[in-house]
Image (cartoon, rainbow, N blue to C red; front, side):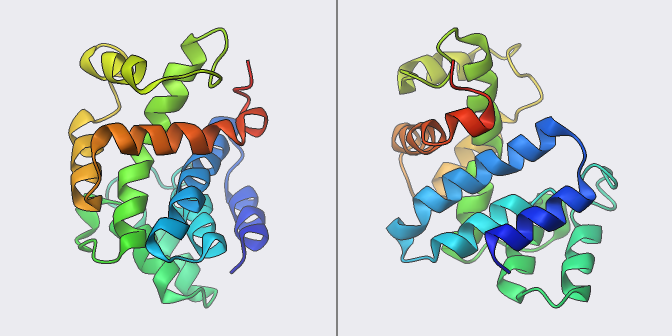
Length: 184
């Protein structure tokens, strides 16, 4: 499945702009990471575009991402994609093994947090620095629904320094700031 096909499926299942932008943000971070791990950027972007495509219809832990993965398998989507989508949810009992799976987990919560930080800034993503993000991470009341533990665990599982991880994701998101509605 290509990113174009993934986007079409995502749009068939998701109507909410914020969820679509979240998946685009994660896909953008994954695409940026792919070359560092010898991955196919299109494949990694596809995974990001699909990782939460069932969430709007099936937000419960009992269903997400299980329903989405079942739909992907029904459509004959490559098992690499299915497994990555499944592995991003701790409750799905699918250990993260591949670099792609680890990277999806590492980028998911962080991308959401970076968007939240950007929305508070007049210049949004432009000029965003690691230190300002880390300061916001320490403020528990800010974006309280974002798990700081998941962000730290994701970077650790991926084997990257948290500062480097944040910098990589900021740089990736800045390349698509206009599409994300975060161009300032």
